[in-house]
Figure 1: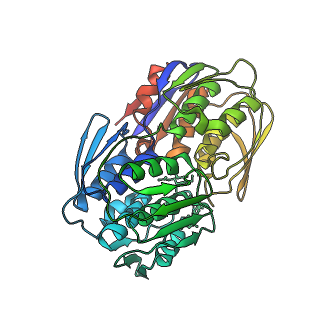
Figure 2: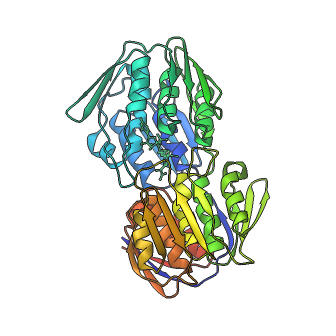
Figure 3: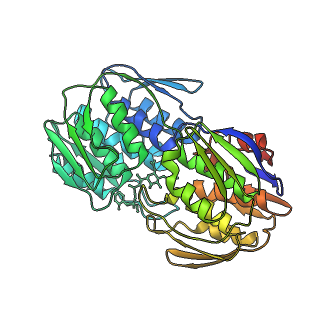
Length: 415
Ligand code: EPU
């Protein structure tokens, strides 16, 4: 599947942000721990959510998804074998490990491999489960973990991993005693998970700080919960406004989650006006180059690094991007070169010299966020572009082309 994009339109209007992919996937996994039905609202129609739906259905859950509301009813007895094909297709499937281990005491899952953005091991997750008393075997590319009942433990993460923090919070929720996760990730999605778990009857505190404390309880009930807005989608729409020289209001957003991007865009010369649930973004003066170092939250999100690269490609002067989270997140820059971007890549650093105008070209999305950045470049470029590999963009952006068309972009999907 591909997008055909005619560049050169200034985007204008209002766009509503969907629910956060990187939160809803985990909430779905955690619903497996409930004894009653969980209702999750503001669920985006994206293919990663379809995949997670498949994963939890294979484990026995009944899922009803209507509009943006999803109801998850766990079965009497959950399965323990995570479906291999789906897990291979989406790394976030490993987030069922903590819930299954805590609820049924066993999980068998294929080791997710590296992916197009670099190595992505799960050693922190496994180290945490072991510290909680689980027996973890890694053989022939699979992981099997077992525990009669997990025991609370103090776990130090070597890096504030989002997925490990979430998996261990889930595991701790039904463990015996208290689990303390030190050097925990501080992303807003972790806070969302804490709020959801606590509605289910868990006792979690500290999310959003570097130390999360989970006092285990015996059982969890259902919950009715609305997912936070997707800050990465919001950020992409903000950059879309600026890169096309337009003026866009991004609606139903949580500005507090985007402090790093608001500051960076202002530093580059963009206009950004913030009110309680909306952000206005516009370009009324030349955009200048910058330096961006991706970091764990509240630092600059690695998932928006490709968007800033797109903006830097037509900014005045040079920009330096330093990627500290992933080992190989610059594939999309090779594609941007086809559109005339001037880029030098040296290991985890990219130097981008802004050009006056990109030119349309035929490019291929190498991954989700890189793909979105190529769409941004195509909208700003002179002439027509084809962006291939739209399936990857569909993993994380709900109705991307409909939302962009609503702002005036000339973008069509070619099946
Ligand atoms: N890491 C390890 N060992 C582990 C876990 C992580 O070495 O056991 C390393 C990773 O290899 C990586 C770093 O730690 O270099 C950070 O990984 P983290 O665990 O924080 O990331 P994640 O949970 O796998 C989530 C998002 C990513 C986002 C990162 C960082 C989901 C489903 N995914 O991944 O989102 O980039 O946090 O913020 O929540 C995306 O949406 O496109 C995406 C890739």
